[in-house]
Length: 114
Length: 114
Image (cartoon, rainbow over all chains, first blue to last red; front, side, top):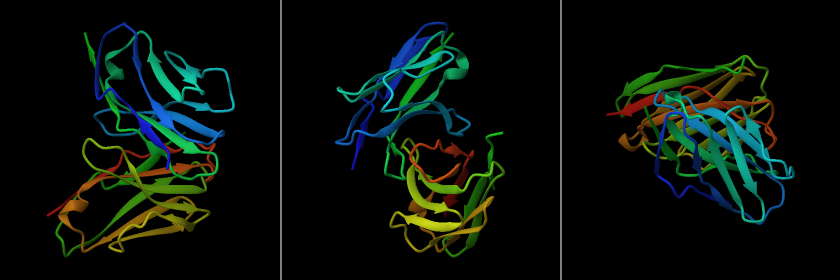
């Protein structure tokens, strides 16, 4: 089974600053999908950004962007101009092209300070 | 509209009770999922329904019984639960079961088994 590793249990960033959350994964497959989900204290899991492995271009979504390094099996999330509302647990997830399940990492808790 | 709704928000039940969790989506999605999330842990897949038929059961104990009465509704029937079943139960849906499809999550039902 593919494993997803988020090595930073907690991160802190000041408002308006930039923070990068790391994610690595272990797979022997060439075709797969990667996701970052955000889970605020209200507990609703929200999709932040997704990346198809066959696309070389890094995905971006407003203040959120990823650095996808396929050879290194790395998928980090950069949050620019951090806002208080960005405070949440962030989960990195992997889904095999032939699979049905999202394999989640253990999450990174992001604290945003004024 | 990417809304998945879940009721109730909170549920307390005894080990001899029978209760049901409800999930609803009106996005025309044909795949629906149940996840279980323990505190400070990532979600774990329980069941997948595709076109109203159960396609995946991740070896979940029979005291959890899913049901998909129609394409918009997903239920999880609970009977004779154990205290260790206390968790946040998340429902998700996607256009289809395909790996490329983004899963949209509901806010969850927080279950406490006494």
